[in-house]
Image (tube, rainbow, N blue to C red; front, side, top):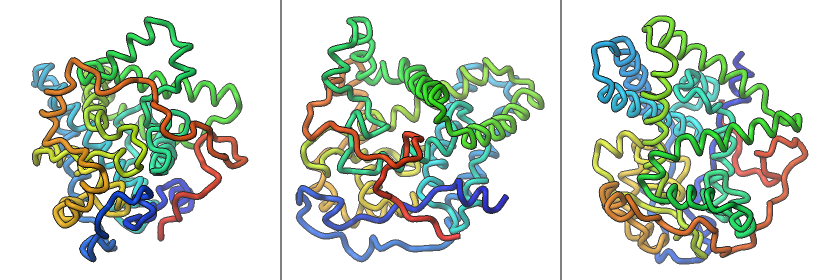
Length: 356
């Protein structure tokens, strides 16, 4: 069992505070020694895990005493918070024991997303030179000009609306889930489905539903509508403005100086430029890094910054953030893949194994 979880858990992604994280040379200064990585147990992350699961247990246990709107608010916050915890595990936290980190997020509150598939796609996403590339960045919402040309008018309208914040919150959850599951069905038909990842997801989902449905008596449909849907929407709120297509790699990643509650919900991933520059750093060190390296990071990302999610809503609630079609600022060709055929690994290794 130890070997199974070690093999399946997240590799650490190399820290890249040097010129490789700013290939356009847009930063005016190097980061200071305050951003050197530290090792040890991430006790704040373990406290977050206790808060997520403790809160989830309480809200589901007392669900009958809560009005639906409050249940949806609390359920969505907890599922999104759990997603932020999963993101920390992808980056090798909170301990150096890979199998322990994986067990920490074994209960899959999303139900629809196997952790190993998320880990795999997120590691691909951290190839910063391909950020926003609709062919190589799994988290990109852009389309190639060819796919846009082939789309019918109803689909174009749907994607246009989805590029508004309101559209992303309402339409985004079924779109992202549908797109992912369709891809998995295609992988199954081609004999490339990651069966081990789905087996682990079924185990984690069984733990969740065993508690939610079997013990607490909350219906599956209620859970999907009041927990999974709003939790996915809140996660899409965070990612809505995270990246933009720009020639300079550093200018593709945002900083949102969110309020403390939102920063805690997203485990400071709103400081996204800092996270991409220092991907091995735990969430609780990012604010200090941001304060120390604010000028360097803003110079590197061209000032792509928002004062909070309220500013994003004020600008883009009913108007698209940008065009759906990728502007083609770099060569849109698939990178070489390895021979495993799983559609997720790149031939060039991004990450080294985590220390056990």
